[in-house]
Image: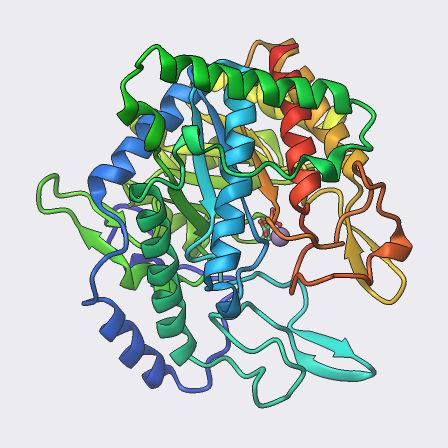
Length: 445
Ligand code: PEP
Ligand code: MN
């Protein structure tokens, strides 16, 4: 297939993996036609601002914190859930700003993370086979044959929940939620048992002192009460993503205006696949997840295909190797990309390569393994003279029991207490906070 002419739907001529088997394609196009004339969720200038921030981080002038649920649920579109997620992301970003002494780019896996790639088309629950759950934008989590059939109406709900979530985030920020002087409550008691607790407490006290100092010096109050916050999700459902793709009349470029940044998953990043075809035509910053089996040449080809003009900030490589494979798999990639001279932002997703299954198919991840992969990533990039520009986490502001370890030292036997995720295990509030402290030390080493 020729790669010369790109349109928002040219991907249809390429093999598209992980697309839901909709029983009624006409109903689907009816919905996507309606979505394509609804207002966009973000604005091109915002997307460009994020791209510049990512470009700066890639050069060492910032650090990207990307995080949120593995899969958002429509029921997560509520005040408490959004508030708690914003709170943990803002607290983590403050800790990282302190550690890195650089601006932190806040990028939520939020307001659109409703679709999931699945390894198997069917899954077995209590001995019965059902079509796999593919995220709330496709089908229902409830084990019910009819409700597991992909329903295109859910794309409209996904658009609506994304808009409602982002609307509330924008209101919170413009209303002063992120005002550093209000220093939203830090639930530090949850990490009091951590080995390095004293360091953590000192760090928070120093941060709060610095804020009060700036305030008493009369630092421009506008700087303390507003922040940039950007949204991202995996660009999986191409019918939905192309319906949210619009031509910017000012520049003539095409933007996906359903999120500021999107990423291509490990399962859909085939060089000649529909996802890469779709993403190559966008002006948005785009991420690509890269696992431990990736061939370095394939990765440089991918970067070139996505960013032939070498635009800075356009491509973020998000490695997700696993703590026991990263030492072997990451250096050849880093060397190949460095040799190619193409600009990329390197990010580390220490979650997806460290999933293990316990008991009856419960997925979990150990805090220590996540920390180990991060530590290796920082060390490998430092050794090769490249820059780890960011991190990518699955986390929540709620007190869930999905990942083991951390200050409360959660065990496999604790997982049943409050396991809420419909897909992959997330760090809970205190594990996320502690992880931010650990990263802020790693950045400075
Ligand atoms: C994810 O980020 O939830 C995901 C599915 O990741 P990956 O594509 O890296 O497997
Ligand atoms: Mn996941």
